[in-house]
Image (tube, rainbow, N blue to C red; front, side, top):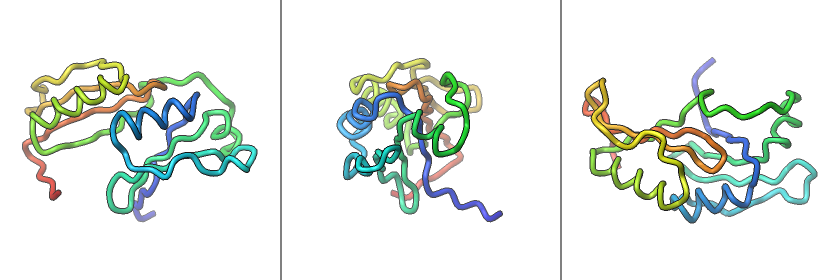
Length: 140
């Protein structure tokens, strides 16, 4: 299998609340909720970077589509890592997320591995890490 990740889908309990968080709170670009005409189809997509999108979809609908039982969410199942170019950018994004309603679980700090990072949870408890790694460079 050639790695080619194009969409990260988060199961959410309230599609409108999550849309507001990501679009209005964090400033992610989206066309809004689409697919409402389908019984299990309402979803919103956000452009992240070239070739990668974030989707939010109702957890019940996601479970239905994947044919898996709906289970209690757990924030420790995975994190979404958002790497940035400076400590200051980590601080700015953590502040932005807090203003948008995120729960700051781990304020930005110097990390044991030599970088600088912090963690927050979105309104459905999905865990994000905002990190600056001095060994990684990013082209804007």
